[in-house]
Image (tube, rainbow, N blue to C red; front, side):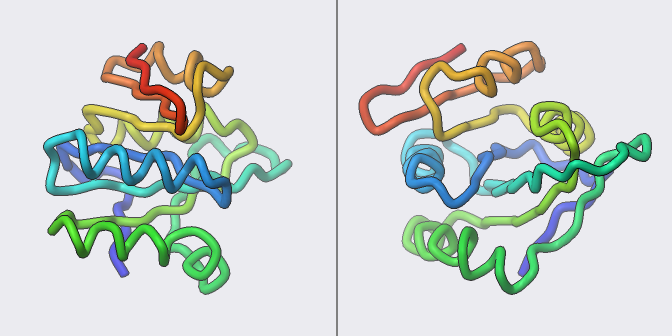
Length: 140
């Protein structure tokens, strides 16, 4: 299992993932359309906890692996892409993704949704944001 911690310096693509089918589609799209050998799958656990001044990043637990990350690894093996996994605890999903992307020198973010608030909020981050859905791909 690979995890990317704060401060790592990867010029990578980050895919925001959860249990939704659009996440798997977004991950597959990133592998097939973005030329990057490293993809970071990031799952944000939206916690109603007091934010302690920083986003908490840790490796996925067994439940996260079974429900979210296992299927993504199979896609990467077929395409010779390295996947790194990270789970973030944050009260604000967008802020957690933005902080993680900033600290890890992410050059593109892929989200499994079409034109929703998450995609629009992430578009202020200085990198390419690709909201995906099974119907269309857009670039913000």
